[in-house]
Length: 194
Image (tube, rainbow, N blue to C red):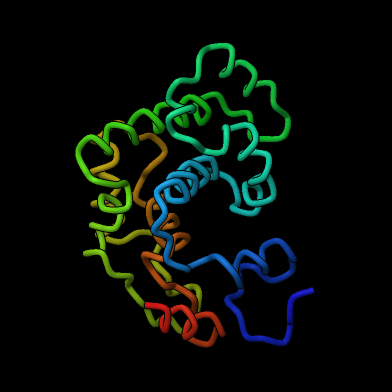
């Protein structure tokens, strides 16, 4: 059981899975290419749904999506796609499943242009996390000029389900942006990481 007496952002309250994610992952800078790819795919899967819906299925996605190995995902054939449509352990949205394969292919092309996916993704914040100082969650933006630029560049390279709002949620999740509110115990902890 997580310590419930700590001050936190309001969005994860009431769910143990959400609290664990908030306390241990959300906003922590991620630099590993495979993890960056996984989170981009999961953020896309979340479009139109709540994040907790995807978070509770993350282990299922890791199995269904071959450990988020972009090389394997880029080579998915029609029978693999059909099996994913039938998989009750993930969100069975045809467009999102097709986008996952397409995004794996786009990811591979990014690696032809950049030395790593990390180099490409982190360029949108000049390779340094942004620490914001929001006093309440309702002040947090849904998108920023950085997420709009990221969205534009990802779309130009063939990625799907990467609108500016999804990109901003992605930036928050992978620690490109520290959007924990200032009264949350994680705000200063993550700011000190940076």
